[in-house]
Length: 260
Image 1 (cartoon, helix red, strand yellow):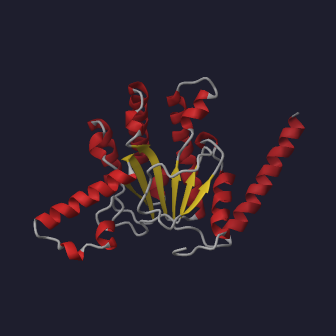
Image 2 (cartoon, one colour; image 1 turned 180 degrees about the horizontal axis):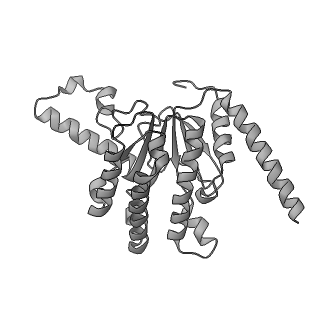
C-alpha cells in the first residue's frame, strides 16, 4: 500500500513538474480571475457545517496565490462573496464574514504579500458589510497601497449587475450636474466608473470556476466579454497546483479572437 502511494505521488510530482515547464514556455495570462465555488458541497459531503468548507477554502486561497506568484502572473481577482451570498442563513453569513475579517488581517501581516509587492483592492458594495469587516479590509488596502508589482482584487459583496447599476448611477449624477454630456457617454465612460477602474489590466484574460458548475453567476458581466473560461470539476478546497496549470494550458491552447 505504501509503495503504491509513493509511486502515485512520485508520478504526480513528475507530471506537475513537466506541466509547469510546458506552461512557462508560452505567454501567460496577465489577469486570472477565480470563482471559488464548491466550499459548502465539499463540507456537506463530509457531514460538516458549510463554514468548515469556507475555512478550508480560505486556506486554499493562500496556497493558490503562492502558485500564481511563482508563475509570475500580474493580476488575480478572487470572487469571495457575492451579493446573493449575503442572503444565505444568518449563521453561515456570520461565519463567512468572520473568516473574511480574519483572513484580511492575516494577509496584511503576510510577508509574502509584502515580498511580492502585492497591491490589494477590495471591490463590491463594501457598505453592506459590518463595520469591523470593512475596517480590516480597508487596513489591508492601506498596507499595500504603494505596491505595483502584483495586483490582488478581492470581490466581496460583489455582483456584476450591482456594479453596472452603481456605474450608471454615478454617470447619471454627473450628467445631472452638467459634468458629463449624454452624447459623450461611451464604453470607456462606463469602464471608468466600474469597480475595476484604474487597474493596469481590468479585464481578466482567463476566468476559472471550480465545482463543475458552468455558469458565470453574476461575476464580471462587463469585464468578461472576451475572457476565456475554464470550468473544472473539482471543489475549491480540493483545487491543486496541477488544476491551475491545466487551466492555464487550456488558455494557451486556444486561439483568442476579439469578436466572433
